[in-house]
Image (cartoon, rainbow, N blue to C red; front, side, top):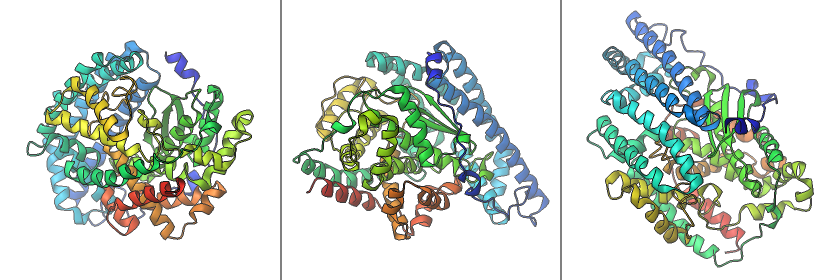
Length: 540
C-alpha cells in the first residue's frame, strides 16, 4: 500500500522565480523581542514568554501535521494505533503548554496592554488568547481521546468506502459526535455545540449565519437549476475516454506550475481523498488521486488544491513559527481554492491555456478539441451524487445536504444509523439524484472520519468569498479576461497576496473582506455570478 503510493509521488524540481521577489515584506516596525521598543521590561518579558510558547507550539504543529499527512498517504495500516498514540501525547502537551495558569495570566496582561504592542504581536496575543479561552476548560483526556479516535476512524472509513460498508463506520461516527458534543460543552456550555464548531472553523459564524446564507443561495440556485434542466446540456465527448494515469501525474505537476505554486516548497503525493496541508510557507503539500476515465477530475482537483497551496505560500514568512501562520479560516481557505478551480479554471478566457496543457500531455486525444468545446464541457450542469465531481452550479447544494445532516447529528435529531437514509432523501429532494450506494453517498468524504464537523459549510462560503473578491479585482482595474487569456496568472496572485494571503491569521475573515472589498461580506456577488454565467451559457 505504501509502496504503491510512493510510486505515484511527483518530484518537485521547478524553481518559481516569483517566490522571493513577491514575498510580503516583514513589518520593519517590529521589535526583535516582539514588543515596541518603549514597552516596559515586564511587558517585554511577557512577549518573550509567548514567543517561547509559539516556538514550542510550532514544533508540535509541524510534527502533528507531518504525522497526519503521512497517515493519509504513505503509512502502512498497522501503524495507525502508534500514530494515534503519538498524536494524543502531543495533543496533551499542547494543552499543558497553552493552558497553564501562568500563560493565562501572561495573556491577560498582554491583552490589557495591547495598545503598547506592535501590530504583529497584538495579533499573536489575540489569536493565542482565543485558543486559550477555547481550550482552558477542556479536559485534556477528552482531547487526547478524540485524537486517538479520529486516527482510528480514518482507517475504518477508508476500508468502509472501498467495500461500501456504512455499518462498519457507523459506530465511529456516533462516538465522534458524542465526544465532540462533550468538548464543545466544555469549551462553552452556554452555546449550541454545533455553533461552537462552526465558529472554530469560521470565526464569527453560527447556525443563524449559515441558515441565512444557505437560504439566499438556495433561493437563487434551485430555480436556476430547474430552468437549466429544461435546456439541452453541452456535450462532454471531448473530455471523455481513457487518460493514462502516469501522464496525468505529470499533468498535475504542470497545473501546479501554471498556477504559480513554488515548486521548491512543494510535495505532491497520492491519497484516497485529496487534501492540502502546509507546514510553513516553505513546505506546502498536495495529496491527490487520478481516475483514468476522468482526466478533468485531476485538472480541477489540482487547480483547487493549488489555490490552498498559493494561500499558504503567500503568508508573510515572518509568521512561520507563530500562531499567525496559515489561512484565516476554513471559508477563506476554500475561497482561494475554489477561486482557482472555478473563477479561473472554468472561465471561457482560460480555456485556451487549459486546452494547450491537456494537448501537451494527450495530443492524440485532445488535438481536435476547440477551446469553446472544452469550456462548454467543463461547465455542463449535471446533478450527480459525488460532491468533488459536481458542477459549479449544483455544488452548494451538496454542501447544504452535509450542513443539514451535521446539524441533526449534533442536535440529537439523528444518529449515524439514520445518515444514509437522510442522505438519499436530501439528494433526491435538492438535486433530483438517486444515490446508488454508500460509497457514492455518505461515505464519499473523509471529513467526518477526521472530525471536521463544521468545516463543510466553508466550501460554499468560500465560493461566495471568491465571487466578491473577483468582483473587487475587476473594480480595481484588473483586466480579468486579458489576464486569463494570457495564461499568466501573476496579476491575480499579486492582488490576492496583497489583500488576503500575506495576513495569514492576523486578520479574521470579516476584516479581510472589509479591507479588500471596502464592504461587508455580501453573498449577492455569488448568486449574481451564478445567475449571470449559467443564464448566458444556457440561453435562459
